[in-house]
Image (cartoon, rainbow, N blue to C red):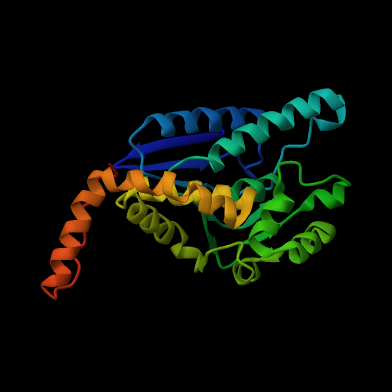
Length: 262
């Protein structure tokens, strides 16, 4: 049975975790995620939603086989996971994670690689690695630090506490907290909106933020115009810019444009 499925329709891709009862990350699931990312990358998808079936998003890695694996085997396994998760993080299209229930360990490390996180009101997040005397193996602690700052990242990593969705939102890890029963609809509607947007501009913003994250403001400024100027040759800008000027001169509201992503 598959541990993950994906679909692509009307410019929107959906990846769904379903490895009951806890949606733990297995080698099979990661291989299926890698294949799904290839399919999404080769498709006309303009936005991606990552969601999970069942009461919880994911408890993290399936640790059952780890005690019997050598250090080299474990490193090879974790590198496979890291490479796959990084592929997800580096997709040029906007990505959204919809999180319900418990989101721990590798599940949290997957979620924070999304551009946007929607969380149900009762969702809880955490790094259980400390309880196993290991670290966040897929880059969780410093990705949380990038969003929430070092002080909260180290606190949550050292304590393995379960952090409520509202606290994660307050510290900038989660973007929106919604009632449990509205999570699927709210996240889907947001992704549909992104999929109808200026896809190349979305990709440019993601690229600039990646440069800023590694090189700071100066590096992003240096890259700005090489990334930004080609947008002026896109069909979307050639549609929107003249029409916006026309609306401004006519003192009319700017229209909503049917962007094609080209």
